[in-house]
Image (cartoon, rainbow, N blue to C red):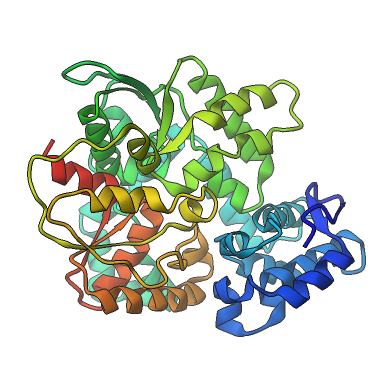
Length: 434
């Protein structure tokens, strides 16, 4: 198939032509990789089906119907179809652009609009407000209110779904990451590398331990770590939800902050954040002021596994005798094309019995805020992941994305499993005992 057989429309990205779509219909390699198509068996819920819908709306042959909106939101944006596509169709850009158009055309449902405006545009995008909300949630979780609601089943009286969503809520940390570490942290010995670090939004208030583990591993590998002040949310959740305006604003702020330093790399420990920051160049390509700056930053972005694989993992002084498997976060394996690096790092640890997870690159159903807005479908997708994990019966399931870890942990807990989901950085810190 000809990857250049596209026509440009107002969505702002290349949409396949009719001839190209006809070839897609004969191809179908994306179908077995698409979680939503596997759930429904409906062509409209497949990548090529959605591309046909997007093309019809872009050409004015189809209105912004509720069915169209539902299909765009039903997609996980896992981008497994991009890995499978021999023609290199950028499906993720298409569906995200469609969501952006739905927002611009004011076609979002009122509840969706309110939630996205409150949480994505304001809470996550503004550090001060995020910390305020996080402290309120911390109080709710720690002084007994949450316990009482769970004990009495009060949430079920409001809606049964609310009670289920509580299990997926991240725990707010006692201390926030950016308030616990200085801006510049030096290793004990020789400085061989100078790296930047994104503390993130939710990572900063709910996954500070993973951030700390990442810092300790980097220091152990002779890195001077700089955590620039005034950095903000990377913008990935906003972009994937179709709010390009706020995502670009956040990207510009981070570019200004990180460009103040000279880095060998800017390290990520969240697959979604890393994938999006590598795309800053794409999202700001029409910005005459920032596009070259974005290119510089995007080129520096490295996942922690990618960076350690490149510089070489230090030989551990002790063995970790555990049976371990690895789950591919979608935006690491499909968006960033990072597959072998984390596996090779794990296999280098003495004593590890590594076993490949069946369908390791199959989405777990977390997908940003998907497990909140599409809870039931998310749980069906999670069931498939849990069955594969239970097939290999590991002690650790390693992943490189907090959303995946939270989703898998919730499923394992409900099943009474003693399998431990753990971030790659946390596993490596345990290995080095630093």
